Length: 194
Image (tube, rainbow, N blue to C red; front, top):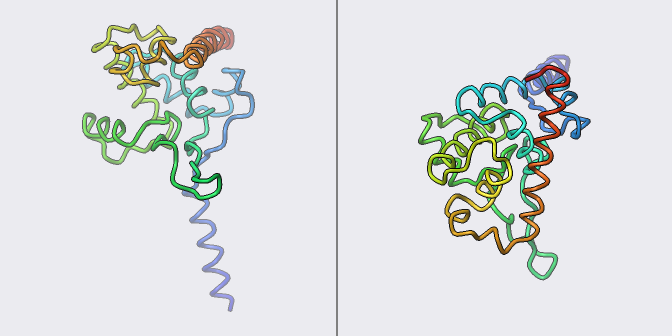
């Protein structure tokens, strides 16, 4: 019996080594608190900024809007007749809420089939990749948080077609994301993180 308990303890220890932190940081309205609580986030944001040119506060504000910094975030289930689950609203998953097809395009483009949407480093790299392509294809500067968010949400083609213009709620949210990026920028400068 003691060998059973030893094996159980060993499995528990091994399982805890592989676990990931998916919960949100405590103070989502305080950028300094977020990066102090999760130093890996700041490393990931800065790496994406160096590689793609997307400012750290822009990345943070869009991740806040998309997933509230919850690494394994998914869209809600849809229900038929109010009770029968028929699947999720979309395939969006992870910090960046990247859709399956867009994530696969990123993986193929960057040659990293092991990248994961629930890994902050991979998610921020994806966002930098996507936004730099948006700059190149649509002409939206990387520091234009509002328009980058609109193109991120509706896709580049949707942005060019102006699908967002008929979505008052999306325009309001894009302005909130822009305000959050300004707030995060001021906070990160005050605590000397950028």
